[in-house]
Structure formats: C-alpha cells, structure tokens
Image: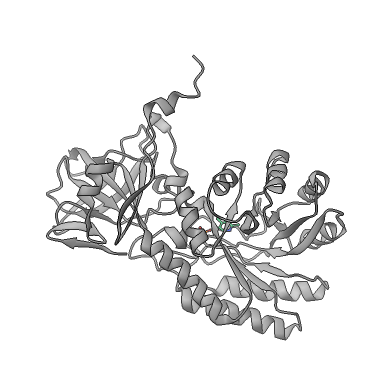
Length: 420
Ligand SMILES: *Cc1c(COP(=O)(O)O)cnc(C)c1O
C-alpha cells in the first residue's frame, strides 16, 4: 500500500487524501489501483511458476464495479458471479463472458436462462435439484463443475467457514451426495461435466486445509473413476486488517498448493487437471480504504470516549457482522496514538461501531478526516441504504492520478422506486 504521510498529511501515490475528500466528499472509498493490479500479477506469476494449466477468476462479490471488472480483464482474470445483478454488471464490462462462472446455491430459472444466453463459461452447480433445472432450461449444450463439500474445516479465525458437513453449500463427499451429483451431471443430456469445485472458507491465512482437501479430493476422484478437466479450489486467501492478521503468503502458499496437487496426482495415478482459483478479498481488500469526516465527540466519564464519523454500518457492516477489527489513521496530520477511544457510526443501532477500544490521537476533533484501512473487500459491496444513507462514491488512485469509479448515490435515487 502506498499510503504515506508526506508533509504531515496522509497521501496515496503522492495525492493528498484531504484533496480527494474535498473533491469527492465523504464517506469515500479510495483504492490504490496499482496494488489491485499487483495482487493479480502475484497470483499469476505464482501459478505460472507451477507450470500447471490454470485460470484465475476474481470473486466479484468482494467489490463489483464496471471499471474494476475492466481492470480484471486487462489482468487476464475471469469473473465469478452469483446473481443476475452481478452478471449484468459483468456484462457491462470488458470481461469476456466466456471467462465468467455462475455460482450460487439457489440460481433462479431466470438467472439460469440469462447466464446461458450470455454465454458464460460454466455453472458451478450446487445441488442435485439444480442439475435437473439446468438440464431442462438449457437451449444449448452447457458446461458445469460441481461444488462438492469435502467436510474439511478451514483454518480461519472468523465465522466464515464453509467446508463443514452441515453447510448450505456444495454436496457432501462423505454422505455420498457428491458422487450422486457427478453421475447425475454425466447423465444429463444438455450438460457437459467439467470438474469439481470446493471453497472451504474465507480469510484463510495458511494452506494446510487446502492441501488436505486437494489430497482428499484427488483420492476420491480416482477411487470413483471420475474424469475431470478442472479442479477449482475457490478463494479465501487472507488479508491483513490489523496486526493480529497475516496476509496470505501468495508465492509460498500457491507453491505449497500446486506441489500438493502434483504429488496427489502422482500418488493416486491421476492425470493433473487444470487448476482454478477464485480470489476476492485478497485482490481488492488491502487496496481499499474508507475516508470519513469526524463529527460529534462524546466523553462518558470513566467509561468511554466516542468519536462519531459521517458513515457507519451502511458502508461498514463487518464490525457489526463479524466483530471484525480495523486499523485507523488520522488523515490531515500525523500524531501519536495516545488515547483510547471508540469510533462510532451515525446509524440507529448500538452495534453501529467501526472500531471499539483503539488508540488514536487525543487531538482528534470535529472536521478531521479519519481513514479505515483494508476496506476494499466486502464493504462497498455490502453497503446498504439503512437509515436512507446514500451509498458512498468510489475512486481509484494511481501515479497517473485520481479517477472516479462509482458516483455517490443521490437523494432522488433513494426514492426513485417509491410509488407516489
Ligand atoms: C466468497 C467466495 C470466494 C471468494 O472468497 P474470498 O475470501 O473473497 O477470496 C470464492 N469462491 C466462492 C465460491 C465464494 O463463495
């Protein structure tokens, strides 16, 4: 991240964040565009080094924007979408529809038809019912991979595991549903079976769970004589929110995983499939920050010191949702972090907190600018209009300059669907 204090002011690629806030207002999402590209390139070079055939799809739910998707197209990334809306946004971008994968545990008939019409590369099928549905709705031959549930618990420190046995995602290997699914797709008239997919969780900071799963899956494929072209191992690579976290070591981690795949294929005498990855958070998470203006400050003697900002859970839900922790910086001057405080949002929920008990400069006053770090993933995309808050604007910053990516929502847009 190129965030840096220059002349006592926080800058990104040399641009003062105060100037950016003045031009685009607050709350504002600011992305280091260069860092987004670098993250894509790190995954590409780590995978290229393995000499396996591979593809990478950006999991668009982390942050969906047409200009971001265009950047993904330039960086040779495909896209994962899970809804009509994400597909629509993707089709407005320069991403080749043949690089789009359609996910989700409950695709509607309308979404299935739309995806087929649009020429997506493949569906990631998530249930036995869905196989029949896609087969029935297919107007031409379609491709699919099956999402399986390996029953492996991801090593993650958040509440976002998805690989355990009791999950709404995937078909369980252990319960025999995965095999039933494969046979059913193979028998389906209008579906070509391409391979299998798993995603064992998010914010995974090391590779043990993935390695274990790769072995287990290859053994299962061999045992059951299942032929695949694609092994899709999902996303979930961690980022650093605070000093308690580690960014997933992309270079070493990918090498560990690709080595494990090669070894498993050798051990079980199985041909090496194409490997697919679906990173979301690790592409955009650390590259994004949020800018807020400080409003009221309230001291409760011997209890707490609340600093309220001009946004909240409408643009920052992860603290309320997961008790997630964030680092903050005072933007318009650099000062020692000498006072314990709680940074609160302005919405009507006690849980609307950005960060509890954090040390920040005691001089913080109304009108100052604060930034929350590592908000590039699952912030804008999880934003809402609760309390009729307007969705913030988004800008990209690089050495070349600052460019708007998403406009701030307007009051008229807030009520445009109201029938009066
Ligand atoms: C959410 C998700 C991803 C991306 O997860 P990140 O933690 O953002 O990398 C990838 N694949 C699937 C199936 C997902 O549900």
